[in-house]
Image (cartoon, rainbow, N blue to C red; front, side, top):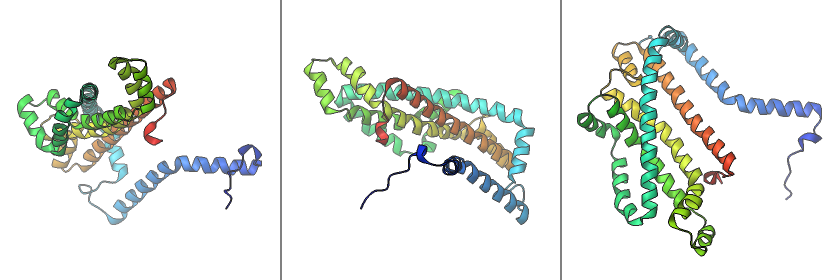
Length: 276
């Protein structure tokens, strides 16, 4: 059975090229079109079924409230972004440092990794109150909660990248009597970059989750606090506006890490081994 090869774009006629471009544009716009369709269905269902506003506001009401209370939402968004960014940086720094130590001394990995797995298995909603008792309410507790949630996927993916080094290249380094420092910085670390960024992307969403958990438990600012205050006051539109802001922050954070990965991969010539 012969395989049909795709037609050469240069060999297509004007009509075929226009249809190809239109299909490509439709494919790229399909996620946005799906979101628009879902929002329109939501708006229509709320109005046709006459759903009470305190149960489920219409998207138009949420947008109107977000515009009217933009200053309030912006203030709480900046507080949440600050705790997310600080906790995320702390988690990444700790994860990369401890991974470098564990790959250098395997005994440390055998001792510490089971502890990390056990801590990760415990719901963070159970650990967060203890952190609040130890540190107190404020930025410090939010940073610790974010870091405790976000560090684990970075550690796991970084260690996987360190261990997946090509054995042939490792033998070459050993044949020239390379030091452990040279093997780490010139072989293990570059090889693990795609794995590290896979963990970083996962950690972005977990960092947002950690900030919200901390703000739910004890905080007087932040989007998590705004969601709770809106629900307690039956101002569901405000809660939805805060959730929408969280979605935008999380998506922007994830996209930023993906862009940085593409930038580093382009400059270094590193291909994404995790998708190969």
